[in-house]
Every structure is written in C-alpha cells, then in structure tokens.
Image (tube, rainbow, N blue to C red):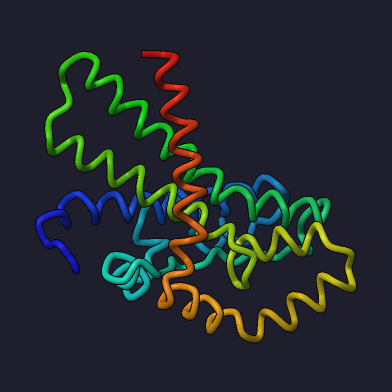
Length: 206
C-alpha cells in the first residue's frame, strides 16, 4: 500500500535514480560518438528531460515503471557492438554507484553524529531505488538494457532471433513478472548481495 508519509523522501530519490540512469546512457552515447542525445536535449541532469510522469507514478505505486528512453543512433558509434554494450551498461552502473555513494554518505554522517531521521530516510530511498532500478534494467527482456547487453554477447543470428521473438512479447513478459511477484524473486537476492558487499566495504572503512 502506498505510504504518503514517505513521498517527501521517495519522490526526489526516484527522480534522481531515473535522471542519473538516463543521463549516464546519454553521456556514454555521446562519448562513443553519437550526438543524438545531445541534440535531443538529453545530455542533462534536469529530471524533466528524462521523466515519464505515468512511468514514474507506476514505479512509486506498484513497483514497475519507466523513464523516457534515451534515443541513440548506433550507426554513429565508432564501434557499433562495443558502443551498444557500453551505453547499455552505463545506466545500471550509474545507479549502482549512486547507491554506494548514498550508503557512504549515510555512514559518514552517522559516524559524525549528523544523520537525522529525515536525511536517513532520503538516503535509504536513494539506495533502494537505485539498486532496484539497476537490477531491474539488467533483466534480459526487451526493451530493458539487459536485453541489449545480451544481444551484444550473442552471435548475430541468435541475437536477431532473440530480439525479434522475445521483443514481440517483452512488455507482457515484464508485466507478468511484476504482477506474479517473480520480479521480486529475481531482484531481491541480487540487491541483497550488492548491499551486502557495500556494507562489507563500509565496515572496513568505518
């Protein structure tokens, strides 16, 4: 059930997770030689450039949502396969980095006695949304990043067949995964493993 008391922390955390994810895609594409995101105004940390309002509401309410995808032209990449792989990885990698950074900031503030409840709530949701967004997008179902990553690793024929067949039913597969609870069974162990690694690193520091 949606808890309106946490929205003041969840909304900005969600907006940041979406923004950093799409900005990382745009920045990686630009670095790989494709100016399309720059021309379309997506090379920015302004959340309004990346926000799909309905997708964000769905993410807050039911745990399944989306941002406005960054358009790329992979024909502009200096190395097409390498470019697609790096651009696809950039979004989830940025989310995992922000998750770690939020945990680090919380640990530092707690160590110095500066961690108020409000700041803790915000940093907690920053961790949760970013780690969730990262692993959700790594699921190999089109149109998610994981499908693009998988297709760059498969031989060309198998990649085309996978994208053509699974891509036709991608949205239905994702809806089924979400509303049957399978998505949580996939993401929760991965998120828990990552957060365990983060906690171990911070434990060594503090």
